[in-house]
Image (cartoon, rainbow, N blue to C red; front, side):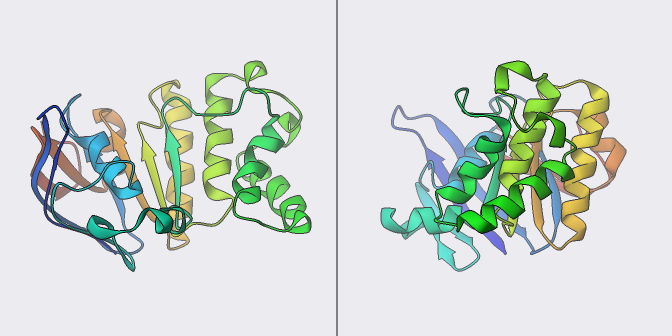
Length: 225
């Protein structure tokens, strides 16, 4: 479970990114987080990953209390989540296979397991034939599918996707969200940050709206302007 209790986040320059946020996401939920640019959506995801720290309040992710989590324990937190970014964040000097395998190597997975899991997840995202390609040989949609495979390959309990469809066409956007829907049906928690109204409205899931650093709406069914 994820629980924000009166969470605020203020950047060193004094900018208030989040203000008294109260939000609970149960295990196995699928949630869209929406809002205009600068509303605080990405800050929320950075707090979940401990890329930024809570300025006030309490933030709990599973067994981890993030407002007082020691730096040495942050890698253990991040092993519980798979993260997908708008800009892919692939290694340009690594093949598709190596990019996905990297997520397993950094946690010390055995080579024999890597050889089994990487092909399986490339097959899941329909990129088996691109395994030996480098990122500059891929389309935007293919790059994002590599990022999805990398996020999923260590079978995390939670997926955080920050504007995952921002650099792909509408058809690929739906395919990527459909993939996250399938993952969600396996019991995984999925949080998708987006500003794409049509996509959110299409799926009729829980929608949390953030404006000016505050949660202004939490409802099911669509994007509320």
